[in-house]
Image 1 (cartoon, rainbow, N blue to C red):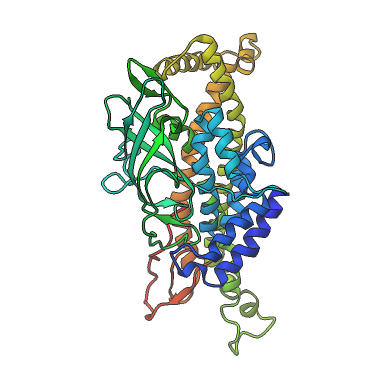
Image 2: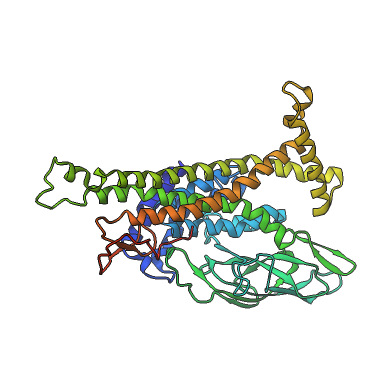
Length: 467
């Protein structure tokens, strides 16, 4: 039912907005804002949440999110990005937030239920920073947090400063989850804080980012300088010797978040590739229709350029790449659906064994990995191999290692090689030396005929290489 409703949104409101020129503007418009309401009505917004928070179903949701992204990206990647960015804003709270933070913000972001008189909150994930940090290293933070007031017996009050870049959903976000580093001797390390638009100080959404594609999502370069209570630190904090210590660094949180969200980005690329196949077929089969020599029933009329093996083989490569990347992406999503409940059990196991801190956990997992490797080398039928299925620690190590391979593979191979094959798809929209240049994505952007007819095939350029 979720997939049916998502497909109805993708091929209804999203398609109509694209057809009416919604991608001609970088600004956030009323037409684009209407998509958010369509997402709410279809249940897309609620996919990320549990039933008690206003969601559709309990349990892991990685595969469900990948399927939603696949359906939306089939028509427009920007629409899929706008949908997923809301989940990304909540992901730090969902993965590492306190129970109070999870319940509060999930319920605020949940779609409106019958009888409720409120507007759902929208969020943005604020990690990327201006040059020289942008796109280089998520461990390098220019955003700072310091204590401005800490009365005895009271909660500290924090000052958060952040200049960010390329932040999706910022044009309408009511809150952001922002990564910042300590600028105070009384705060240890980095953290992710929750900033709300009504907090005292500056909540400047910045200017809209000029993009080649994904104009149906809101992207900007915001500036924040806000006062927030220390309870907004994701995951909470401890106080030791007068120093505020966040329970999770920003790196620990984004590691848990990105392991899952990168998979859906790879699935989006697969959808774009597969959605390109039919337009190429329709174009090449009708390439010669209208000419006197291409009469109905003739090979040239019925097949056009697809009567040639080169055309067919190249398109098969595009299709096969799309199918392979979709298979890889969905396999990774299913692996994380299996891993999620094991991670929760592992947190309880750490508490039982008294394992605290990243180093202690790594030592325990390394020892388990060595044990797992030795057990796999035992002959078949050895009773000791039963531990591979019954022991929680060994099962976790095996599945966690598999996810460590599938996640970057789905992200890097799908988007990397997928970009090359999208260029191949673009080059197929032409024939006999005719070149057409894609402005943005193949399926949803306009085409512009080259003013010249080159004598040899040129590599296409100016093609969307983003997920």
